[in-house]
Length: 332
Ligand code: HEM
Ligand code: MG
Image 1 (tube, helix red, strand yellow):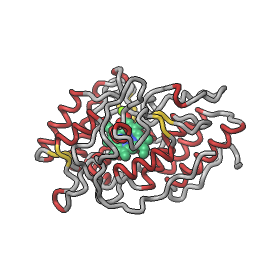
Image 2 (tube, protein in one colour; image 1 turned 135 degrees about the horizontal axis):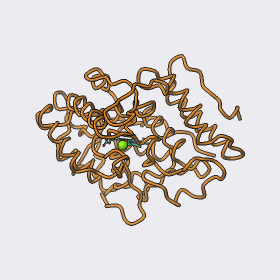
Image 3 (tube, protein in one colour; image 1 turned 90 degrees about the vertical axis):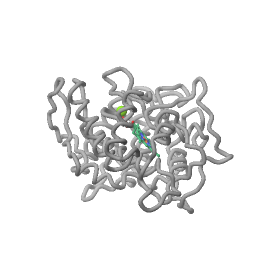
Image 4 (spheres, helix red, strand yellow; image 1 turned 180 degrees about the horizontal axis):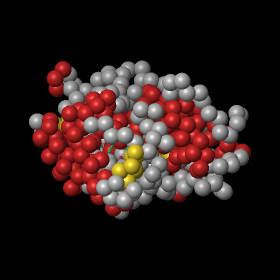
């Protein structure tokens, strides 16, 4: 039976996380890495299993311990990813692509159980440092995109990545995808995460010893270390308080883009049918009734039981206002 999600940290202040018990080691052959610079770093320092395959509970604990991610944010990310990309029977999720290390796939369901790199689930378009799947690689560090990240940090952040830079770069990446990717998708889940992730880097890649005016500014060398190498800058201290997407309202307010998708290049069509940032209940309903039911139309046995357990954990992490829980597979 999947374990209960870990609770918040007991000590949730800044502390050295690039410590002697967690040395950087580059991934070896067969170790899974993917589009999330946070999880890549946690695996490269041994906060997660170094092979990049972990339970949702391990991912929550590691995100809290290694980055001071807040408990709700960590649970939301881990359970949504696990429901879309993990093996619900073995309770294992790959932080990269598909691997046998997550165990035997449950049979007879469309779910691919392909890890968090699987496009169109959690992973989506207009990432800051990864290309769109349409162009062939949606998970590797992209040096050209990082050059743009540096350029924007110089122009809008005096050489650091902060919320002002996040707002401008988030918008720029969306404009680039609209102009070049005929399959650009910014609906539902991706509408929610694209903005949130731009703030994640501000809050959780900042050294927790920085306070006052220094806080929330990530220097370029640190950003490169996280995004490219999945590595803490030497002596890195995690954030001095739990956080996740704090400040995202500034990113959204600067350049709001409604949920939608391209129907051919340069033809962005608004589509609110999957919900999004401004319709969390719509997002929740689509996620359960369409995304999850599409992956698992008729689960039975342990698969059904574990789906229900993970759906409860997901709903508890999210708790959308005025939005009752949906039970697509009945109640246990
Ligand atoms: C991106 C999953 C925790 C920072 C992503 C992506 C996935 C993901 C699937 C790719 C989305 C995309 O850009 O297409 C998760 C899961 C987590 C988690 C399941 C479990 C708790 C974290 C943590 C941090 C973080 C703790 C920071 C310390 C980021 C950032 C991006 C990202 C900055 C955007 C990368 C870019 O746009 O180039 N995450 N993540 N994530 N994640 Fe995570
Ligand atoms: Mg992406």
